[in-house]
Length: 337
Image 1 (cartoon, one colour):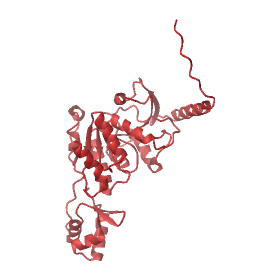
Image 2 (image 1 turned 30 degrees about the horizontal axis):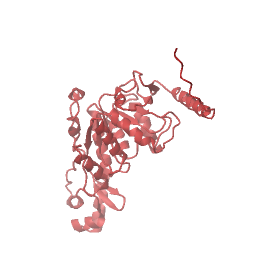
Image 3 (image 1 turned 60 degrees about the vertical axis):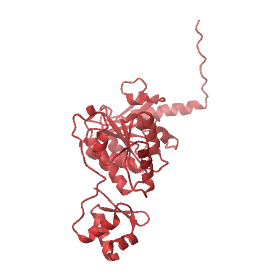
């Protein structure tokens, strides 16, 4: 005769918290609309992302909102520093834009810096209208989906929900606690066919995501940078381990399954390329002096031979044209667009 296992006792102190969590989830589900659906997917649910089943610890429950009727195709994660250089931010935006234009879904973590630029680039390539005929981008977050972290990305989160998915393994009401984000990274890696790191320090969450992807047998890509920049060291470390060097989106596309790209023309734009030299000789002299690494004003004056008034006017013009950016510490960096 089978003896049932004894029930696990539930502490009376736990009951109010459990009931409150259920009520928050019910209230969040009730906010679902045809334009922005809310759902809870359990393991075994037909809509539960199959890619997550490869994890040794797939989330037993997944919370999702956005254009849930549209299933994403091949996904590529674009991740990097929360404090990127202006060029790194632009590279992430441009690469994500080209990936989405080629029919891929861009996955990232909605964080400040590279993550935000990646989502923005994908959204810029998405068709206009409230609901896209596909899933342009997926934001995997480390909070409950009734919260947005960082708060500065509230509008961005709304745009992601209008053209893609927001997903979390954490129930509504969960605050942004530090230990949630490393766990979030494993979902980013699992959902993606490859992980592209744009800028990263040697010890960063982006490298954790890349290492998880490598362990899963996924493709890892890295954008190289200046040997003098701490934000390039993480990418250079990945390149030493065998990551593929990325200069253009074509470097990513050619490593992905060909059937995923059969209905799309591969793009070959190169966000890391420098703009053509302007015709103004003062501008040309200043860009020559700037080179490809951030430089302080005194170095620019010494290299170019320009007077300070000439140099400041030229820097202003180049900044307005999107060819030079001011950086912290009185540095200037050349941009490629």
